[in-house]
Length: 166
Image 1 (cartoon, rainbow, N blue to C red):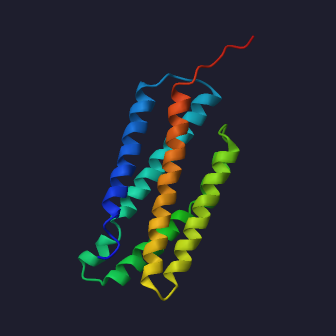
Image 2 (cartoon, rainbow, N blue to C red; image 1 turned 90 degrees about the vertical axis):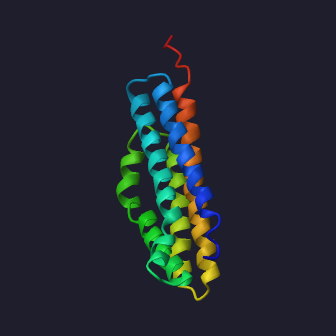
Image 3 (tube, rainbow, N blue to C red; image 1 turned 45 degrees about the vertical axis):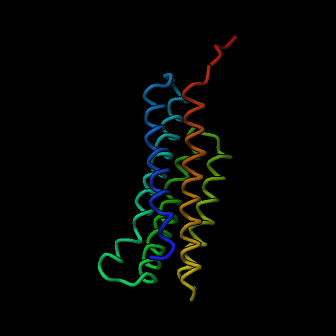
């Protein structure tokens, strides 16, 4: 399938982010109160975005396995991925924004996901299969960007030194 060479590499990167973030959260310092809630939100978001990238890195291969053409495989995977990116936003982000995480980071990640999801949905409706492949890769890169931002937030929060109040 043309354009699928990159997908296993993206899946490996997503798994590495998830594994290292899990290790950091286990081995990192303990926090309490609002900081604990924020750390859990970051870890959950990072793991969720990494697992979604992992799953959708292999999604185009599933229809092809059942005999679908490459174009049908990319369009089917693209439509399902666009739905998976856009459908949870109204439910997730109000909860995330009400938690003690940095709202600018949450809004930035949400906007990136909306742009990638809309680009993917629009590309599925186009006539060119190359556009679908490009938009699909773009959406996976946005998922990895989300994972990487949240990974850095997990790492820095796990090893940050809290200063006691004066």
